[in-house]
Length: 375
Image 1 (cartoon, rainbow, N blue to C red):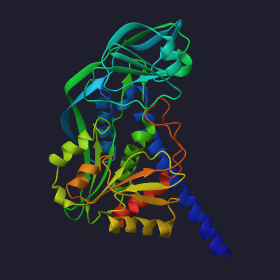
Image 2: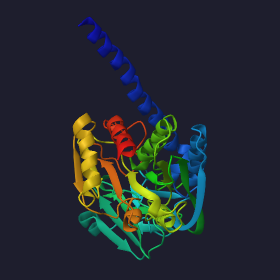
Image 3: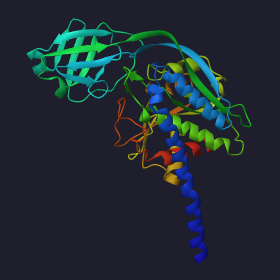
Image 4: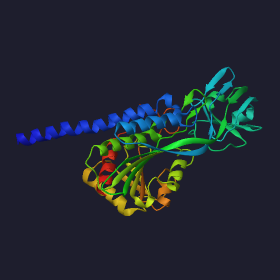
């Protein structure tokens, strides 16, 4: 009996540090990707390129040669002034207001009418003001509309007589960004693929940036963490590719480009797992395409039934909501995993590395590892 107790204690001592080690590594990646120096990993101040260089260096540190795949996109970026002066108060971008991602530059002084204070919406020429109880998520666009829209914290704008609005916008054409590919060769040239997008929405002006911890530094961190795990293991039967996409937030552009310019034939992919928004998980995970790829989904569920990695696995049908989509439409068996739970910060200045709890991180890590290893 004593011998059994000792063995249990030894197993706990060795297993727990391994799980913690995964989170420690992931949180190191999160902290870096969400830092101000990467400017929200968008297309202002070269944020995407700084992040790409960091990720390439991380692959190199793991002993995996990174392959950078350039492609061009158009991005509407907010890289100058972005502020509102309402009465005597200067409102701050991100905290007090956000804008429609397709907005144009404006510099105007607007009289705030009684109608606006009552009905929460005012349009003057090509500027629309919407006073809201809660700011909507900030996005990014590849075009400009005729109307510039400001969403403003209602408590800060009502009962003000006038306000000055200043927004500098630049529509960048032919902007070069990069997908990043890392490969661990296996015994065959058929691949298991693990993907995530590393880009986010960037900045709103010079001072406000959107860290994008949940979406999607969390998925990027797990891809690197899994690469770190597999590179230390014996050679697998299948080769494993780790792909980090740019351009997801602006319309799945990186994965669209990759599926039309693949580094290896898409027909050589046995399965693909896409990881996006892994910061929550206390209510389990959702698997997109789980209800249409029943064999793959059932295998994932059976792993979890045996090992109890995550609280619950739910499924849904196909959806063009992340980078798995264009692979799936090209015939690749692709599953997209995201977390369910109480953490709700999304496309705002509060989605920071230190804020996301990641309660299911270790379980998802093991679930994906087992699926890639055994399926």
